[in-house]
Length: 174
Image 1 (tube, helix red, strand yellow):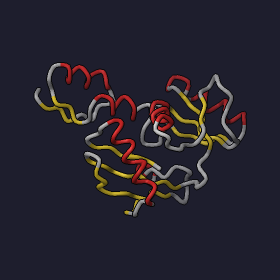
Image 2 (spheres, helix red, strand yellow):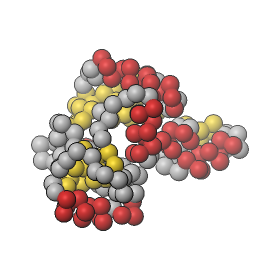
Image 3 (cartoon, helix red, strand yellow):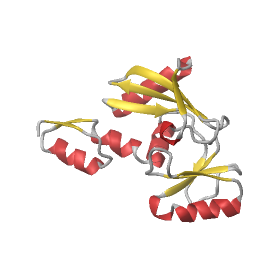
Image 4 (cartoon, helix red, strand yellow):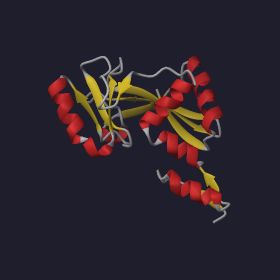
């Protein structure tokens, strides 16, 4: 094909299509970095973007409890769990053992985050996602979403990300 609008999380496939001459929306690097939370955090670190401390199962855990335990490769919040103590932490790590788990410090504002949607580096919209009943604010898990105006420092972070990976379309969570 000449043009591929990719919704796959398989960057090997999109890279192969690019190598065969197809124009791929989003490029393979976007899928590679954005579909692995550790790769995303490594990019953030390389760009000087702050993020919550995290660890992998064989490393010392970040500050807590509580902790958030999640799959590196999950999406939609279904593989994100709260662990209030070391027993729960061990159980959640075992639950996700085949999904590349990671452990992260809990965000200061539980049940809320902001997602910015960009197209070719331009902000299309920002939404504040909230939940009164869950620490996860995903709309698909019952959270609410309303348009909001991002704080000024967010624009610099978005610029650094888009300059680094050149996404055609992307959502960035804060």
